[in-house]
Amino acid sequence: MKRLRHVYIGVGAGIFKGRHKEVLDLPTLEVVGVSDIDADAARERGESLGVPHWVDHREMLEALKPDVAVITTPHWFHAPIAIDCLNAGAHVLTEKPLAVKVSEADAVIEAAERNNKLVGITFQQRYRSDSKTAKRIIEEGILGRIQHVDMIVPWPRTKFYFTNKPWSGSWSGEGGGVLINQAPHNLDHLVYLMGLPKRLFA
Image 1 (cartoon, helix red, strand yellow):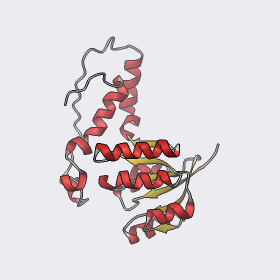
Image 2 (tube, rainbow, N blue to C red; image 1 turned 120 degrees about the horizontal axis):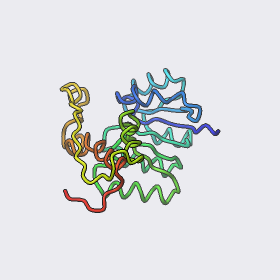
Image 3 (cartoon, one colour; image 1 turned 90 degrees about the vertical axis):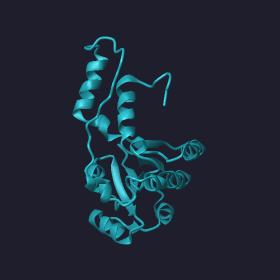
């Protein structure tokens, strides 16, 4: 089984220290470099992983030519960094959302197609045990024919969640409120469990 050479961009993010760090020991993954605009965070993560670190992700891409680039930066930077990575020949896995504007998302998709590379968006909630159980129950027909779905998700956010990251919880920082930050997980849950909708009202 081939080990894919990964780089991480935005390793100063709290999420990198959580879910992303949990998968670093997978036999199919080899971390070869990290970057962050915070030089101290880049150095600290690089040293802890025993890999070189950069402040400029473009210099890292040029030097390492990785197979996969993982993006954990604030929302506004996902699209331009993803395009840089795709143009450098790397597949991309980014935190949600793919982009803040539809035009930016379209540009990412165009870059992926032009470079014959894959782009994935992290939706880790699919892998919760309750989500997988719900999926199995629906697929096995235990509930019969599903005719209507309401989703109510009690995932409260504490004040710390927003004050911990200065860009979080603002239009200028996130590009929107709950619809672009928390709701993508809920919408993905619906698609994961029920399939893509035929019509959409917003």
